[in-house]
Length: 192
Image (tube, rainbow, N blue to C red):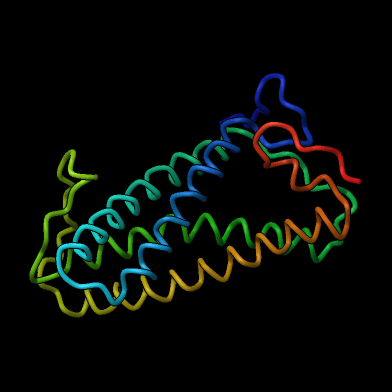
């Protein structure tokens, strides 16, 4: 498959599609992390409703992340700025690869966890249509593994987000590079 830049796109910025995927998925991940953290001690119907939203949002993240990966394979990203140190470029590539892995494996671990439950609750996409379960109903070992994986991967995602945001802000405000403008929607004012 040929990897072409988006027509008319500047080589210093990501394509419009990549930017849209980035921010849509980032928002959904933030919502899902918040739901997981704030509802941990909830009980009853409010928790059940929040968990249903968490599951549907996780499946949405999974689908969008696969679409984003396919977009990335077909649309070459802009080259990293020449002023980055070698270790920064290596770290940037590693973090992006880890993000792609987590954006796919984290929702899959959640889907596997609810699929392996002996007491399955309805699995649907925001109440609009049902979603299939994976074929592991009642498998305690799979459920235990998936639960632990989901939790560890969730905390790993949170740590990676903090690292990613800190690095973007460091490059923008301390190094005064235009790195943040590569992924920012619309135009970013020139650095001062």
